[in-house]
Image (cartoon, rainbow, N blue to C red; front, side, top):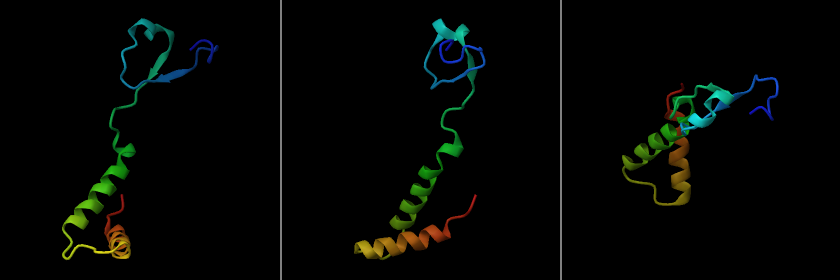
Length: 79
């Protein structure tokens, strides 16, 4: 860290790996695992998949699938 931030102001964002032997070399930037802000794409994917699974009849062609996905996308609640 001293090579990159010789002024001692650098922060390290860790991925929860154990770094005890180097912990005194830098300050840690707290970043919670599985932050909701980072997982929004998974929520959207799950909502679209759920909507497709409950569709009757299911889309039969790629164009039908595209139309259904666009329709369902418009129905998603905004955050």
